[in-house]
View 1 (cartoon, protein in one colour):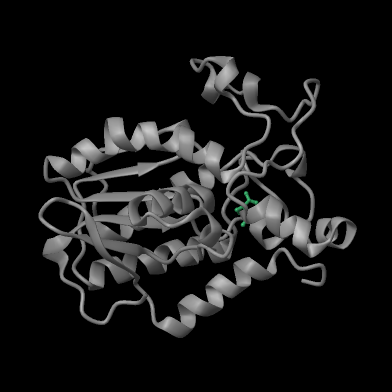
View 2 (cartoon, protein in one colour; view 1 turned 180 degrees about the vertical axis):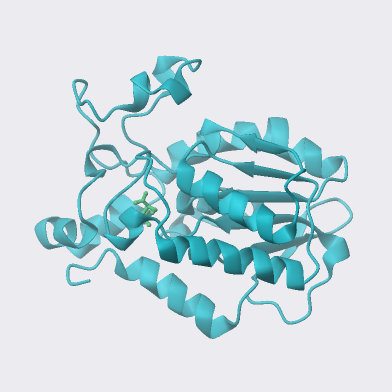
Length: 258
Ligand SMILES: O=C(O)[C@@H](CO)OP(=O)(O)O
């Protein structure tokens, strides 16, 4: 849904997927790999911030993951909004889903090898995990300094949406939602899967519908809620054609000929 007539007073939450990363551009499964923003991603984040500013949005607190494509996108948006001063919380629970042994592989090549249907299942099914990283795989993030204080058993070797939802929602309930409840306007700048998990929870999207839900990079997704803070409406801050083209671009990444 896109916005023609937004009402800022009812908005306490905006979700944003980071701008396009270098690995998005190269069409590689990324997951917990710390790929940087591409130049286009910088531009997308800047545009997202400008549109939020022009539409009169402002925030009291912001959240991102510990991956630089999320952190940098948020910084760019806050710069556009001149909101450098608001508290920013970075948390590993908001990371992209862990793509296991697919991380670093080209999506189109993987589709050519295993079939587009299998790749769609790995990318979008609710509870099918991609193949795991081997125990000995040096690509496992357990030794990464940013996860030093986390119980190693919590550092995934692969995740489906359901797994990601189960790590993200405790943070939503314990930290994010209480801020909304106490009146803060919240911006969450994270990843495709983190946005899918939150959208699924907030809008009670059935499992069988989630397979077709793709999140575009760099387009703010606004939630309006009623007085009980239940979401009543959500919409992207861009015109419908732009949103649909951006969604299709993400869906097409899993095609064998991309
Ligand atoms: O590679 C990834 O980590 C994600 C997001 O970029 O990709 P997909 O859209 O295939 O889930």
